[in-house]
Amino acid sequence: MNPRIPLFALAAISLAGCHTDMWRQPKGEPLGENDFFPDGQMSRPLLTGTIARGKIRKDDAFFTGAVNGKWVDTLPVPLTKALLERGQERYNVYCSPCHGQIGDGNGMIANRGFTLKRPVGNYHTDRLRKMPVGHFYDVITNGYGAMYSYSSRVEPSDRWAIVAYIKALQVSQAPGAFGVSRTEIEVARQKHEAAAGADSHSGDSHSGGSHSGESHSGESHAEGAAH
Ligand code: HEC
Image (tube, rainbow, N blue to C red; front, side, top):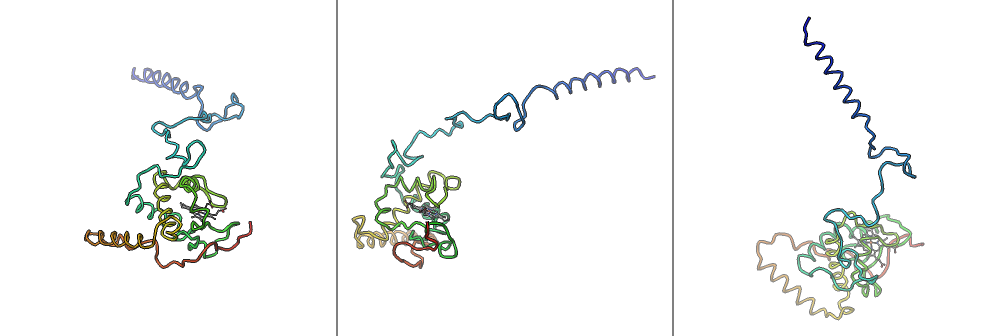
């Protein structure tokens, strides 16, 4: 008889015992039950005010669009051409389907069977022209009435880029309301085109401007306006 067999059996038994012990240890499984807590769940909610490492949001103006409960009326980021271009691109992706490429509320979705209790907002009203930038940031972050929040899809820095672009759209449609003359806009446009022309490597990046043949109708539209 092989003397190693009983030894092996002994080892197997003691190891198995050890395994069972660890298997049955008094631990909680993440989504398991637990009668100890009133809600009967093992997972505990995060404590109020918990912040993930590296995610502290100290800058109220940047992250909420408001300081001491008042919307900010200047951008908390530098206004640059790159910011506006980013804003234009993100706006066209996320907002133009409803709000239209010039922000008049005439987007493709609004025009093709989209019915909500309230019509899509038109940015070219006196009320919204006077609205501080913080309000626009807040609408993207928290939604507004029938419009849902875009906070899961648009990062804070991109929200500001979109806000800056919306302000540019507002000026473009009613320069007078912002104390800008049409001539000033024309001069700026020519300068921009000259710069773009000098920059001969630019491919088609300047083609998709905000005025691509949308109808420029006035105030409100869209069907189903009953509230
Ligand atoms: C699915 C359609 C839809 C999309 C996409 C959409 N909105 Fe809206 N938006 C609405 C509707 C509808 C309203 C009007 C809500 C109301 O009055 O209850 C509105 C209203 C607004 C208003 C006006 C708020 C006010 O004070 O009257 C702003 C500003 C706005 N949206 C910004 C945006 C921005 C920026 C984006 C892109 C990030 C966006 N929306 C994307 C449907 C949309």
